[in-house]
Length: 473
Image (cartoon, rainbow, N blue to C red; front, top):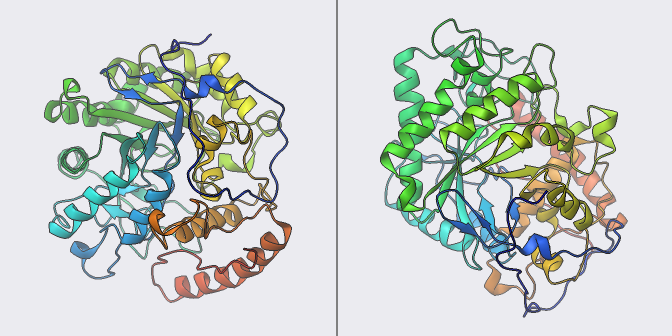
């Protein structure tokens, strides 16, 4: 069942720039891709020009100062150049990476921050340029606003705010996590709700078309949702309704300041499943998603996994056989949403699978992440009929750290020059579908990991990306 009728089929002209083809692509059978070019209309009346979503990918290349929080989180020219490429990719919607709502509780050093602490002319000017770059060929520019909670690296903040004081024992990128401080009722208002509202208003005032509230992958709001991390006994703990309360209050308070009639979109990213024992069950997730639908979110992005057991690592055989890691779970949760537009992100690599997921009623939109760090114009190529699949990377897809580092590396390459200086939007990007390039990258990544570990061992925050020099032009 297809929920959205055909409103407009995009017929894209050939790219004005020279073609730069990848070495090899994943095999894909022929498909009518016209459905991917249909508009999507949100409940507040706003429209996306097609079904493609550029999913959030952490950049880690904004300003960072280990001592002065007011100097953190200013978008660099490199970030603007990066989104200049996706802004020429023909997406319906483009999400930023993690934009943190305060300068202390970060997913990583180098995150962008929208807060009173770092607000000023430099941040404002950079954000206007950033949002403009995202919207160059008609995409909606959406700021993903986030609070890392207990997943803040210890070297960034030794005692981050969280829903409870349950410490994360795992390490990420060689960095551990400190003992979190459980938020008081007053702090939930001042340090969470008020800060999300400030970030949303800041986004609106600086050219963004909406925000996505990050409530997935183990970050603060996701932590409230799961009984694994939420042991509160007050109105924010216990029942699914109580564990969802803070997300509902964030949404309601944003809408008090920015009415739906303005056309400003408010979406949410949520886990389609938690793999841990005693985590969210599918029924639990369904109940929470029903609450999201009743809240009035304009769109919902379904994803999954967290640091301790990443869904990206193919945790189940049934998932391993599907082209989207979370499709099995989205099939069960999707019917809950009647008015909210649903995007599924995670694993889409071929146009036929994208088309089938839409035609089967599993999703309205297609979220793309790592494939579009190799080719920022992949949607445009698919819609123009130039290809039916993503580049066939020669990296092991089950090696999460290797592939994540590769995507960050490619994003850094995309940020080196603005689009105006390129012959093709894919210039400068390492083609990891080329075995020679992939093998050289793997060697470079081994040295990079050694340097990361040395940085972490010194008690310093890891900031930036692997600076890689291509060997294949």
